[in-house]
Length: 96
Image 1 (tube, rainbow, N blue to C red):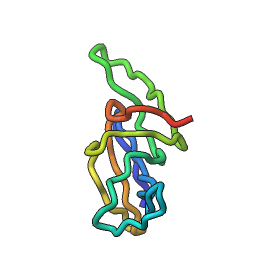
Image 2 (spheres, helix red, strand yellow):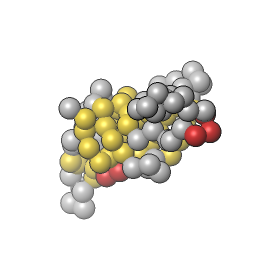
Image 3 (spheres, rainbow, N blue to C red):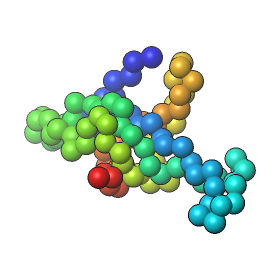
Image 4 (cartoon, rainbow, N blue to C red):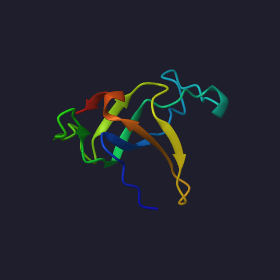
C-alpha cells in the first residue's frame, strides 16, 4: 500500500520496543513501553501558511526521530506493518 501524507503530516514506522532491561531482564509484551522513536517513511508537501504559501518540512524520509508517547494516529497497512501518521509539530527531535 502506497501512502502519501497531506500538508505537514509525516508517516512514521515505529522502532521495536526494548525486549530486555539494561540489567538483562526479559520483558513480557504487556510490560513493554510504547516506542517513542521511529523512522520517517513518507512526508507531505509542507505546511500551508496563512498567506497561501507552503513552508517545506524540516524532516525528510529516512530521518530517525523522537516523538511524544501518545503522538499520532496508528494505522495498519495491508502488508501487516504498523505506522503512525503525525504532524511535524508532534516531532520532538531528529536523532543524528
